[in-house]
Amino acid sequence: MSALVKYCLSVTIFLVLMSHAYAQPAKDYNYLRGKAHLQSGQYDSALVYFDKALANGSGGVGLLLDKGLALYHKSQYTMAIHEFEKVEKTNKGRASIWLARSYANLRDIDNCLLALETHLSSPYRLPESELLLDPDLMILENDPKFKEFWKAGKWYTGLDQTLAEAEYLMRSKQYPEAVNLLSAGVKKGYRKAPLYAKRAEVYLAASNYRLALDDLNQAIEMDRRNAEILSLRAEIHYTTGKFKAALDDYNSAMKIEPNEMKYFIGRAMSLNKTGLYEEAAKDIETYLGFYPGNDTAWYHSGMIHYENGNYFEAINSLNNALKISQHDARYFAARGATYLKTRTYQYAWKDLSMALDLNPKDSQSYLNKGIAALNTGMNDDACFCFEMAKKLGNKEAFSFSEKHCK
Image (cartoon, rainbow, N blue to C red; front, side, top):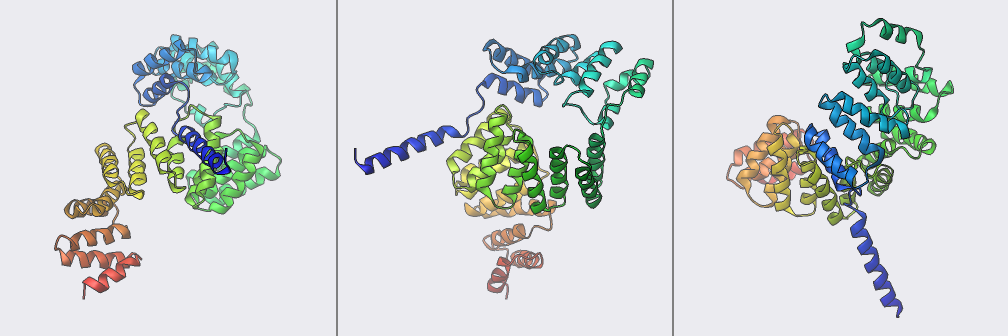
């Protein structure tokens, strides 16, 4: 076999493998379909698919937990407890808060407190403020045993309190104060991975991508199996134009959590930016097959097709986004820009007008609307749009204004 033939064969094998490397959902279709129904509030349908998955012998602890959640949301608390207890046998603490909530709804204070104690001693422990305001647990808030339980126990460490306070400061947009608090926690010797991860969130909220990335790198170095942190770093890489690094992080997150479909959107966008259009289209199509009601995913689908010149597919995706929601200016702006490419200028002008009603500071939409107006004989409107685009800093608008508005 010649060297050329060997090379061609290796390239062919590589391309075949690449075609199967993306857009492959986790092994059990029934489980994923059940999760989609669960997240959409369609609990009966979710249970049908969960039972099918269980019959196939797949899904593991996550499937049992999700089946319990579906039953819990149907107020079938005794049956939910049965599923949650199965989870606790193999992964202690993971379903404990749901056991506590289920027992609270059954007014079983003793078992509720036993489950709550397990939860508070587990790595899955929720913040104190969240538990104290939990609507299920508050059913028992006037019970003397419940009051004594909270008085007697010291469940939260200095690290927990620091993270909770930092979350509050971040939500209040007090970013310097949150950073200072978390930095002090690092110096006190608290467990550093969650502190770095939380501080990265604060930096990201303040649009300081460099410092956010520095902290995430340290957090991942200490906690390499944390898919959430990896996906957060992927978002920063994507935002700062490091698309290959973003793709690598999304792939790593999906290896850790193969049944978590939310990473498909980010990976599709990263695949597209790295030139892998077909793989990107498959990823977003796979996601939408499970979550057809997600308007943001339809928008991203439209942008992937638009950026690759597949304008009719783009319009189809953007139509779906707008059927679900007409409150996001990006959807109208994207469809308007796509109509421009297909030279359907009246449709473009109408969509871009809607986009500017929702976001009057979008310079690109003003430019595109001006171009659409030019092509429908509305020169005065075109010149107005070019002038507005110029005021908003769109450099391309200057040449259009110079050429058409003297």
